Length: 534
Image (tube, rainbow, N blue to C red; front, side):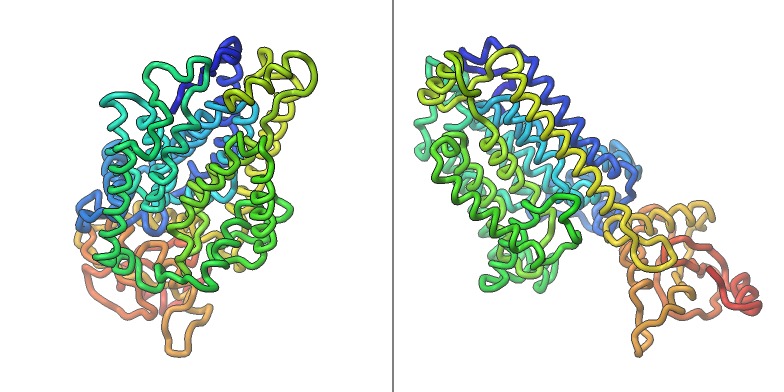
């Protein structure tokens, strides 16, 4: 990205103080909202990724999320082993880096206080909950940070700008939904180019190159190649199931659009009624209102000069690849698009203070260069007070809503949580901790059985009920146990008990994942005395 220090002559007098203040505020706000992620355990799809890094499962070799699903876990296994705190800290740092990169992009042409507000919206938006609380969703921040790095590299001269090619390739391998970036790169280059009286500075690329730039063509070929690979190999359907990734270009398309727009607009503690990953009619009105507001903003020349249209195009470009997925409507797909939403907020809040000769010069500078300078050391006390208040309110709202999502209980006496990422992570942590305390012998064949969950009832055919299935899913059919205890021979989940000799061991579990490990000889005597209790 361009340096966070203002580049035009009128803003150079400002120095670095407002930018450093903005950096501190944005980072502090992001930490305040998502600090709870640092205490989370691994969840669901984290265990196959950990198993691949440990050699328990075949490694990923195809392009499908190779960077986020294999290389990222390889690196963190070296740095942190199986310590979930390391993985969640890395995810939070990536998120903060994305928020600060967005600030740098906005700061190229907008005031520091406006860029602060837009980047803080992105840093604190509660729709990022799953992305920050689930390690496997790291593809969102990893790909977006690589996108920002691609834009920065493309804005240089000489050989250095061709670093954009490997950076964008890695972004595609982290999450394929950024594939449309080359369509916007010429416009983003014009936005980020310095706009001082000389029309540029050493090391920057003249914005006139645009679509004639061979770099843009190469990046477009990378995207086209990845899309062709998926189309020819049916990678999406084969890896995640045809139902989950089946495209829907009719009603599903409109439902997804209004849902994603609605989630973007409705992020306030008093108005969010639920947080679940499915098309949500409750937010369609919010989505329609946000779309109407953006379209109305296109009529205002001041907003257009501040990138209002480009911000909306950025949101759309990162959302379009996932929009047709009729059965795959997830909050974490909003991660990159919300950078565009933050830009819109910054554009709306950016304006030259009214009145006085200095303000007239600021408006004249806007007319000549499209850049709005900060006036005075703080850009105007009132303007900074407004931006800092907005940032504080966004952080407070985000923190309260994220805590609500994190702690909302699931009905029942076992302390389960409504959010599946938190719930299943907690179940997995309880089970792994209990097995570690019990000491699992090498070669053991573990049988997971829950008389308590079974007593809750189930299908008429005797199959699993929700509580049993929830624990099995939390441990990924036992793969989580094999990751932490590689000496275990096998893990199975059963719905009925029978006495078996060594090396079989019974993991008698509760719906919250807490368990006791026992051989059949011990368990037989307990069962003769009466059924297990809570």
